[in-house]
Figure 1 (spheres, one colour):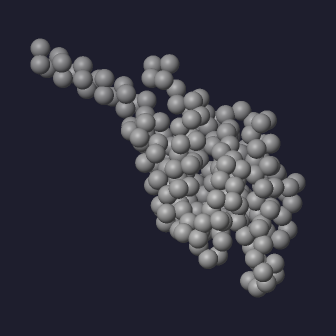
Figure 2 (cartoon, helix red, strand yellow; figure 1 turned 90 degrees about the horizontal axis):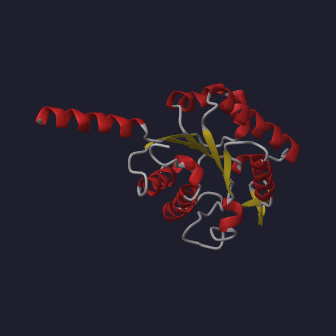
Figure 3 (cartoon, rainbow, N blue to C red; figure 1 turned 180 degrees about the vertical axis):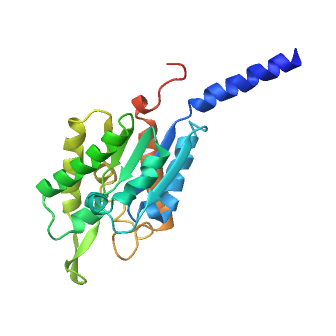
Length: 220
């Protein structure tokens, strides 16, 4: 009887283990802060403790970086996530040659590459929060970089026409919260402090939990 019960428990454990969602996060220096993705993981595990979570990031990259460095996809493809969280766009908005049209093409190329290799993966895009830049590269007065809103608008529009894609418009949700806080943003007005990244992680993690279609009930 004990042996039979043990077998039942083991089989049950294997069944539920097989249902665990695989969540992968990728992005630029924000994700590479480590604090941000770790906070997102903590928030997600608060309701889904059995998820398999991992992340990969690289400073200075944007969507177009994957086109010229296809090896950046390797970690994503190897992990084969059910949910892919993508926080990119900050560096694209800093590009002096930025246009909405070119950004749209870069975003689409990224999506097509992921979708072709991982057609069942659901993608959650996070728009870049509002930051500042100097008027003349590394000198001049600081000005709000409104191109981040242009990037956000393009991502929002893209998601509206592509199935199994979602957007967390952090640019709209957070507004000027980070820029207006001396304790949450660093002196470069782009990167956040450790506390700032924890706040960002909470915002993003909770929004992902609120997307019900990402979290199917067991047995469905």
